[in-house]
Length: 509
Ligand SMILES: Cc1cc2nc3c(=O)[nH]c(=O)nc-3n(C[C@H](O)[C@H](O)[C@H](O)COP(=O)(O)OP(=O)(O)OC[C@H]3O[C@@H](n4cnc5c(N)ncnc54)[C@H](O)[C@@H]3O)c2cc1C
Image 1: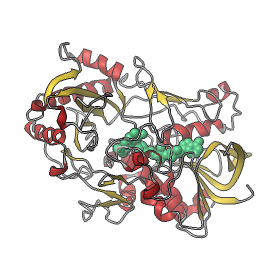
Image 2: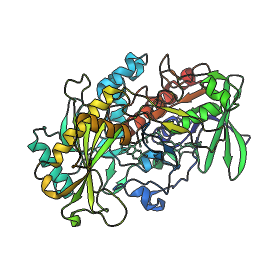
Image 3: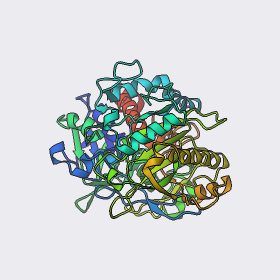
Image 4: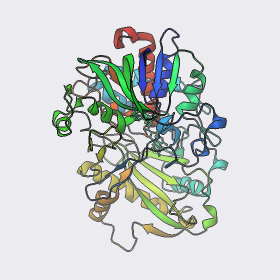
């Protein structure tokens, strides 16, 4: 292709779609958004699995990755959206911000642009909070609509769970995105009725009409093309043909699994890892793939007394408890979350309540399986090997067990099926369960971490290379104390705004 774009964004997910939409607000800048999956130009043409926010879409628009959660566990599927909107188009639509201290921690680690007071305007800009838009820490005019279920919209499981929470003495929290809040209440969610407000719907629907924005779907990026140490384009595969598209600046927004993989295939990553696969080393970046950060979770599973209360067409998640482990220095480092039903194949009979560790010390790894541009990376999380993580998840699991023994939730339960109630549940045996069976909340990040000792600087620019940025969940230095979609969109807002307003100085646009 002869044409050269000012900016090429690889991956139209939570961050990439936002960057392309924001950067193309300047009509003088040509922007190409490259996406491996399909693109649906409007909601009428969008398939039901993407529209239906009541449950995740796991197969129809998925990459088919797998991962090893714990050293003792089995390898299991690791879903990631493969479509415009990325994982925001297939996810549960929980729209939770991290704690202010998460972002201040990133700033303290050498990334001052990401302090809470600096990212708050981006969080406000991205949202239209339909319940609390008038509060100083919320926005009411952004592309992503957010609301919370009212009491009479909650399924019986969520109503009973909330009342059990009251009985256990946790305070009610009407807005989990209030930066000072904790307690239990309805989840903020980026859905309107059943419709999932992905970044494809929130951002691209309006931006796609711009003549200076081109969305190229069905196009798999194999690697970044360099002249010396300057990125000059991307090598892509489209309709079975390999071609190079030139750009003055390239942003990788392919997500925490694929951005590090593309980077390594392009010659930027840990030297030994690249050499193992015969990839010429352009830049030794030891932090790529070596600090994977994610939320380990383990659910208590119950058989319902009255299976007719369980309905797979109802929202699977509606409520949340955010709270702090005893003695922890990390506010809201734990979450407990009920699931309206637990799909096990066949008729629905069970529901679940999950314990989730939100602030983690342990890290995992992401490595290339081969230099083949279609090979999924090898992902090992090593959840709960760090004693500080394991002990807090054990405590959270105990608190979760207290929920299912408390009325009115207890009254909905015929029997607890996991963990096996006949076995003694000592801290040690619960710790063993965490080491064997904890699994990802699907929030991988920090695989291309920002920071002076990371792989990119605070503007997303890859250390030691020119014209190449990374901007998506992979640049978070550590996982936030919250589900990661809203923070990924915020990252898109920050980098998109920098591209629009300071693009020539920061990115050579
Ligand atoms: C099933 C599921 C449920 C989740 N639930 C929630 C939730 O309720 N709330 C929450 O906050 N978070 C949730 N998450 C996590 C959240 O959605 C992600 O953290 C967030 O979407 C990550 O954004 P991203 O921009 O980094 O990556 P993505 O949104 O995954 O975007 C990456 C994009 O790049 C494209 N891409 C990848 N490789 C290539 C390539 N080689 N060439 C071209 N294109 C490529 C992908 O197809 C995709 O469109 C969930 C995730 C999943 C999978």
